[in-house]
Amino acid sequence: MKKIILLLSAAVVLISCSKVGKDEYLITGTATGIDNGKTIILETQDATGMMLPKDTVKVQNGKFEMKGTITEPAFYTIQLEGAQAKIPLILENGEVTIAIDKDSIQKSKVSGTYNNDEYVNFNKEITKVQKKLMDFQNKNMQAMNAAQQAKDTVVINGLMKEFSKIQEEVGVASKAKYVAYAETHPKSFITALIIQGMLNDPTADVAKSEKLYNNLEESLKKTKPGIAIKTKLAEMKAPAAVGAAPVGEAK
Image 1: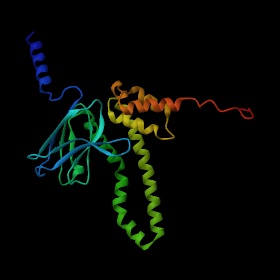
Image 2: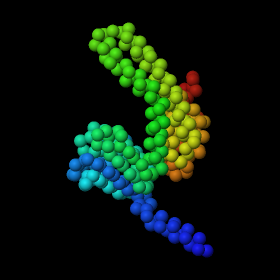
Image 3: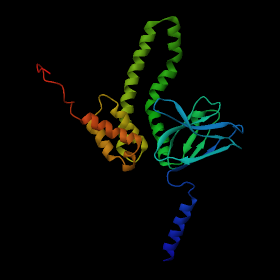
Image 4: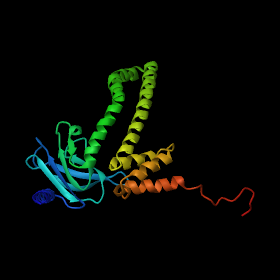
């Protein structure tokens, strides 16, 4: 009996420690070395591609905090005043921690919720797959610039041919990585985005995409990407439109 009471007490403590309720998010950020008063904007893209601010705060003593409501996961970015790059994150119900690297925004760290942790790990795996392409670009950048200035088409065409070959290899490997992730992570918001992207490919395997969609956690099927996938699948599976008059039939 005492063990049961202790377990219940522990559960109450864990629940009471949560700083967010249903459909709420809390972003706790550190901005070490960044001046007080610097603006930080939480923003997202609308359907036209324009960036829309959701929240704006000021850095105080190397820290910042944002709290609000959101009903489903969605991609957002953090924009630090004066920084050239943005910090991507998945805004969702829960507590998100962001550590801004003022010297290299791309090295800033986001963690704290399932989808953000998955996004970080997924990007690491994709970076490994695409490393061969990046290495080729870095190794041959000077040679390409020199060839372009000298109008040396032989060198230019040779480098472009080699680049295209590596690009094709990386593309195939990346696609395989996307599919493998989607097959093994039905609870991840990234999986919904992967399936949505697959269906934008004219050569998409509809049966495969539908199977991945059916395996998605139910809550993800209710998100904007989930609804878009369902709609697209219905369109792709529908028979050709009927209504064209038979050849030779007068109207």
